[in-house]
Image 1 (cartoon, rainbow, N blue to C red):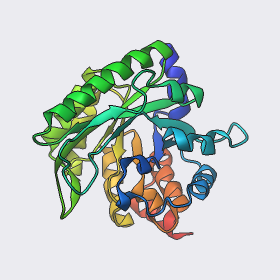
Image 2: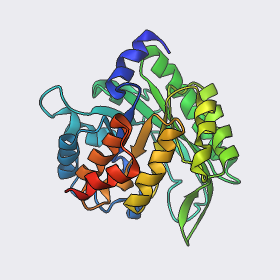
Image 3: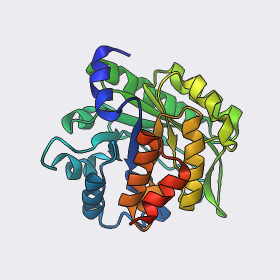
Length: 280
């Protein structure tokens, strides 16, 4: 990584650790993602006050963060792509594209983002969608190098969508490791990776990445279990988390942020994290 990339990375990471709260879910066009995000202005204000290291948004939300007065606010991570991979059905055509194919990081530069994020969807029998993701990253990587913008790649090894459960991630360690390795080799500065089904295997993901790995949260889980698994993943070498629904769909998102920040930056265990949450 160049020194100029490091300037922005320093806004994201403190002592190599980061909590990025993702609220960029509206662009997925999946109704089950919306509960908790109805009043996005209040959500953003509450998150800024809670003080995670970063907040992940789309262009249309970025003003709510960047118009906040003062220097002490979370860094902006901007989503650059859009796809139809999160729905409960398998569409006749599965696709993934950049939001701005001509100038893919222009919005991020205009809004003073600290990093941009893009997906790699690997869904069974959807090689064209996978190819589109690789082409998206090729364009994005070139622009990120030109303007010293850190690139976060989100490799998603997924099962086929089903009406019973919608899209499902595949927690197979070998699949995640292989896709993370691919993401690293095509130029990721940061990798947002799914947890392995066996949390104790996550060090293999970290070893394959060779860049900071932030754990992807996925669907809402029971908080004690979330904290317990997060603690193991941190022990396995994760640099932090990118959690969305496991923050904003709980009763007190600000307290979830406080608990996770204690885990990431202060070494709190799962029991202590849960106590912080329940102290609300």
